[in-house]
Image (tube, rainbow, N blue to C red; front, side, top):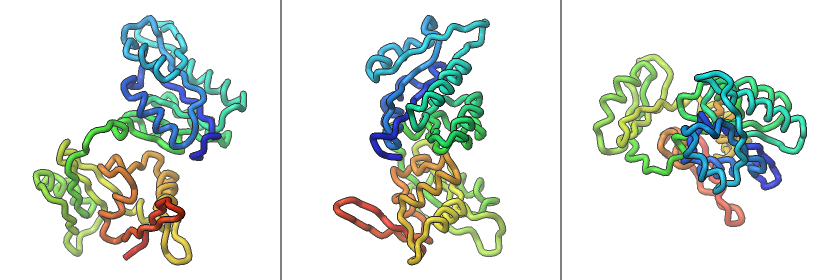
Length: 276
């Protein structure tokens, strides 16, 4: 996917996307291919879209005018969907990126996927799960903001103890791992507490374990990149940045049961992970 010949159509819901993140959005798309088609949809007579006017020229985005047929409503959704189907049947691209947090695009993502094309979504963390899971990859815009995440406190607890443990852990200033007492029941999870935002995020370790098991070779080792690809297949929205880590390798280094092995091939880093 990550080659320059992989052409992607980037279709943006102007009423439902953040113009200030356009640079980060294009950079995110470029990880998987080349944004050859760039369109943003909205009613450009509305002052609500003024923030897009400078961005459009800066990033060579084609604005598509769609008037609202009814007060309080707009035709952006239907216009974007119709254009997407026209592009799909033209056969000039290999993938789509839908930039929106609106569940109305769930059916479109499914239809594109059924044609065997790559489809990714970019939207806010509150995006409905139906739309998220309809994409092969979904990136939350909160992960695109270039801000220091603050100190990360991690602890391993049982699922039924997560809420209590995370509340107690937020004020601490160090990083440590705590295991729930023996005999408790529930699914083991890792809780990431961002001390800057005081936000506790659950990382289901069983998801990591499953992706690792799918990825292992005969030596019971796996390339971190392969594990990452399988994690995205299981959960399209999985992203180590959600938990405060820039890379999956950094996240693996905080999980006690795994060990990360440095592996340089022809000057390129291909880290390997295995069970301790």
